[in-house]
Structure formats: C-alpha cells, structure tokens
Amino acid sequence: MHIPPHDNHNQPIVGPGHPLVPLNYFNIVKLRRGESHDFAVPGYETCIVPATGSIRVEVGGQRHDDLGGRGADVWDGEPEGVYIPTGMTARITCLSDRAEIFIAGALYDQVLEPFAVRRGDLDIIQYGSDDTKTHRKIKHILGTKYHGRVGRLLVSELYTVGTGGWSGFPSHKHDSDRTDQAGEMIETRHDETYNFRFRPSHGSGLQMLQREDNQPGDAYHIMDGSTVLIDRGYHPCCVLPGYEMYYFTILGGLSQRSLKQYFQPTHADQLHKIPGIMDMVAKFK
Image 1 (cartoon, rainbow, N blue to C red):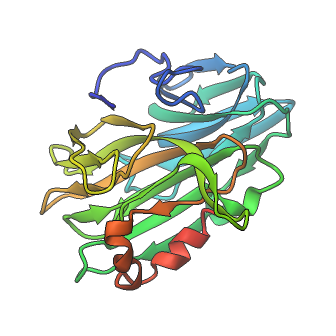
Image 2: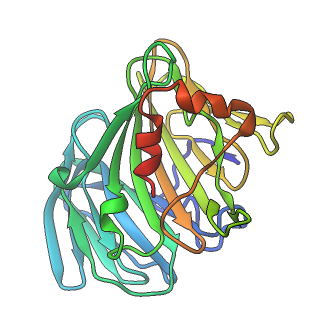
C-alpha cells in the first residue's frame, strides 16, 4: 500500500492495529523551537529518530539532550535515536529552529528500559556495486547489537550510493514464520514500513510488490515523503537516474526480533553476483 506525501498534523500515519501492518507503528512529528510533543503508544515499543533538527527526549526519568542535529535533509549527518519502552510516555522538545521527527514502533507486550543511540553507536554497512546498480549504505539505529534490550523492533536508514539504481534486490520477502523439514527457520513474519526521501527532492522512484514468484504484482510511484506498507510479497525498489534515494525502515517481528529473509527463487543466483550481500543479510539476524 502506498500512502502519498501529506501533512499528517503530527497524527500517526500507521496507527496501532493497522489492518495491513498490525506489527508496525509510524508517525512523523514536526515541531518549532521550544515546542513539545508528548506521546505514548500502548502495546508498542517505539524509537524516536530526528530526520532533521535537534531535540530533547525525556522518558522514564532520563533526559537526552541534543539528539540529531542534521540540517536541511537526511543526507546532512548521521542519525541518532532514543528507544521508548512499550506504552511509556515520552516528551520530545525541539531545540533547533525546526525539527522533523520519525517515531517508529513495533507490537510488543513487555516493558524494557529506555536508552539513547548516538552516532557512535550506529552499525553501518555498505554493499553492492555501481556495476550491478545495487550500491547502497545501511545505517542500523536499532540493529542486532541491541538484542536483549529491544523486543521486536528493528530501525534502519537506507541510502542509495550514487544516483539511480536498485535497492532491496535480490527480491525477498518476510511475511510468514516458516521452517524447513529439519525445523530450521527459513522465513520470519516481519511487517515493514518505509518512508522515502529523494535528493534533489523532486526526484522519484518505484516500489514493486510482487505477491507470488513469476506472477504480475503491483508497482507504486513513490515521491519525497511517500510511505509504503509492506504486508506480504517480494519488494524491491528503485530510484530514477540522476537522483539519490533514502528510506527510513521499520521492521516489527511477530515471534522474534531477528529477521530471516526468504529470497525469491527466480533471482536467487543474484546472491552470488552482488558484492557484500550476505554481510548485509547477517546484519538483520
């Protein structure tokens, strides 16, 4: 499902119990200097990530100042964030002239401890190549290093490296908890939500969603600010030549936090042709 860019007036874009991605929560909050936003999401753990601007986050007796600091867009510096335990009230205060803040969430019933993720804590991986038109960089904010401190939520930022090209390829899906005959997990159910940005901002791209291998699927024209909900199927995306693409990524697991992607059989040979792809896969486990 594609949700076109719009002013959501600080109200959730993907609310609790969404019929397509019930394991996800997503909001974009925009504030001016000195303004605050209080929120709590019962049943969902969340992560606050400034897209631009600087903020303060107060939660559970903790105070985290000067989070973020990016300027004009998401290419202007590294991300930072704060993990908010399930249902806990947090206050966001804008410290810069303006701030745009992503709030990512996953369904989870236990209450853990809040903590901040600073730029030095990021887990960054780059893979692919210009030759294969798959060159991209992933900045894991809530990645594998936080197993045990986070319940079901994975949060990352993904960038195409250079202009044009593909992301999320080889095509894969993660819409079912499945095991092989030996009981080994071969796929996990993780609902996924994206929010896209382009540089320059008038750029655009394409999000594919193929429900079955070798059968026609859906395609969405994505623009700066587009939100896409991935409920099931194989889902590569691409950006027009001459433009860079970014997408904020939320993954919420049904039964575990570690993601097990199932690669589309038709394109499975590409796993051995794209440099670094298996290192990328390992970072989601």
